[in-house]
Length: 94
Image 1: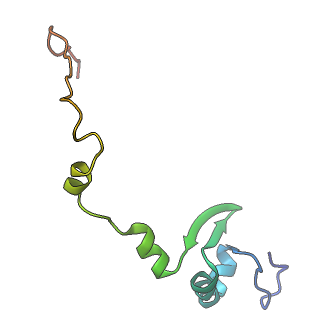
Image 2 (image 1 turned 90 degrees about the vertical axis):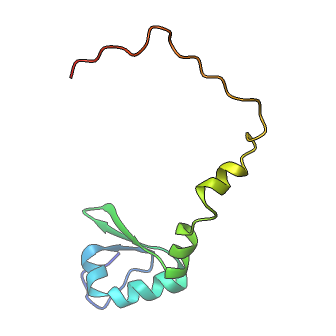
């Protein structure tokens, strides 16, 4: 990534925490223009910066839970029969 020169910026989409802190505006600009920017800490992925449009697209809900169940392909199947043990609930020590 960098060789320690504070003017050098990574060419990839991966940044160390220190480099990302020093160049946060560039991290944001690259996320908006070039896609997700990964930030690593101690060589492990710590965070990902994405454009707000991408975040909205990935987190947007489509419909309600009721609409989801109403459109289920299982809606018109015969009634589900669940067999339960006749002896009742088991004893549990708490």
